[in-house]
Image (cartoon, rainbow, N blue to C red):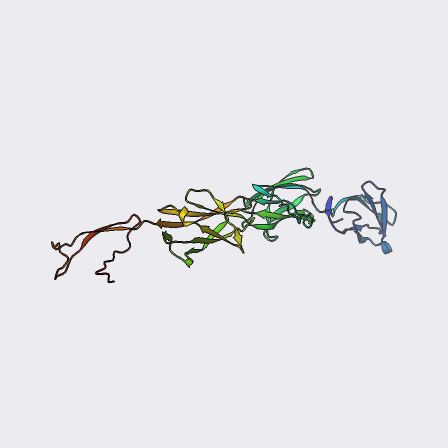
Length: 361
């Protein structure tokens, strides 16, 4: 036969070889023995007593895993036997078999909310959200003929090798997987290929990842029903209303709550209408100075994001005093230019000083 002993295959195979004899050949005898069963003999007759003969036999595996031993003997026309040639074939059509697989990473469990409609949603389960994008994976695998590849992927296209160790036919493997986008229902793909090309694959579905803090955007600031765009919102004694509308967002587990506070006060919940949260403030609650209104958004894995609005409140009127006419006259009737001198006091800054003569503009 032309091949070496101890062949490993996963498909149909062929025994083939040549025999020669100076007087002529009569037959080729192939004895096959499957491990654990009685042997059987196949005979190939050599026509016309040829002195050189090429022979072959195609064999089909019966089961996924089996071992066959073959003895090949050539007989000449005088019934003398050749030296016995032996071959062993190991058949393995069985794909590698995954055992347990574990994912280890920081995670938060979101419990199912019980409602009156639970009967309609009885199959809903608590959700697990990983709060780190690096997931550690460990697992076991069984394979008899050896592993060629053991890999993972997040897109079923680009593959990375696991680290693996072997103990007889059992393999343990480990690796770290980076998932770079938040989201629900992501999939990790794992595949193993043995040395004969048999492949086994596994999908770990329903991976939920929330690495990033939620965000909140200030949509509008309305003072006395007018939208203002200043970096610092100014209110005074004539301010009747102040409201701030915000839009929260979260790319992972979703928005759980929106709250607001004034300066160092306590946070209070803000209700939602059509995806927008509006904070209505009582101007009297703002201190008579500069301050900060803080909006906080929290997602379902307890990550938080913040936005702030700076305000300035001034309800005290400025004071003004005329210190002199400036030209030395003390009478009210003059026929020349009068220079007035005076002073003003304003805690929050003075905008303008206007002078009125005899009630005119």
